[in-house]
Length: 182
Image 1 (spheres, rainbow, N blue to C red):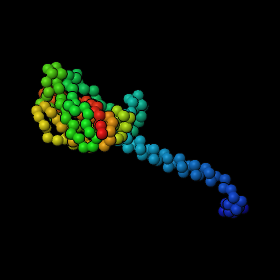
Image 2: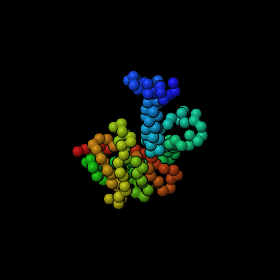
Image 3: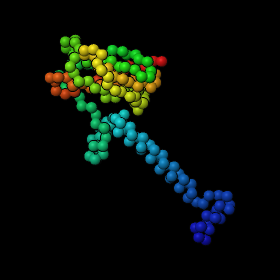
Image 4: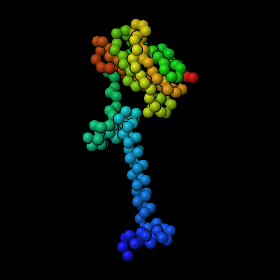
């Protein structure tokens, strides 16, 4: 009996030929693996997940180079700078977020710093891949920086900021949490 005859005989008896279940399971596993792999790659590329250094140092160099790099620590001379969110609550939807960079050593805002927003996401509520639009706006006053934000839903949002301070080497990094309300 050839393979084709065996398949036909098994079909006529109402049973699957041996191995058909294994092929279906293999196909299912491959599809799920591709979907999960694409999702993990998407999150890694967007910087939504950090890979611990203990893991990254054991990977081959080409793989480690593809992974997101952890943020470098701020130089000690920049630790005296901190961002302050002027409106810790905003309405969900389109909102204007106002921040200022403070020099904690003198207690005054830094008026001439170059501030830029890096990311707006819902990581405080456990959804780091839920991001919102973020665009700079004209400054409403000296030392105040504004950003147009798309807060698509209620909850806590993380605003990741960076700044270049004139006369200082390095970049100030900070993350602020705000609440979007109805």
